[in-house]
Length: 121
Image 1 (cartoon, rainbow, N blue to C red):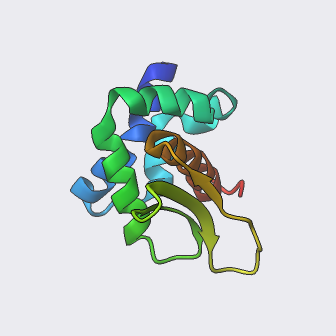
Image 2 (cartoon, rainbow, N blue to C red):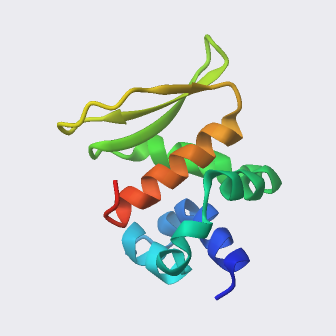
């Protein structure tokens, strides 16, 4: 699998996850080749891919909103025209970050979320 295929698999994960209905995010990430390319998949790489595919940003924002487990989230703060990246639940205290750029917020969220799914929080 090429790095481009891996990146496309990652940024499209929420759409595939919802369309299949019976797949786990963990299995989809394994199938994407993420484990073999983890070091090469940075927030910057994800940002560039998401900038070309804004529909994937929308899908990840919806994925974050639908998630009810302890973990990372990203949400829009309409009043401030910003995006908050934070951690909800669990015993770990992690500071929130605020982004003006929704694509950058999403890229950072994806990296944290996929590392958490793969067991590297």
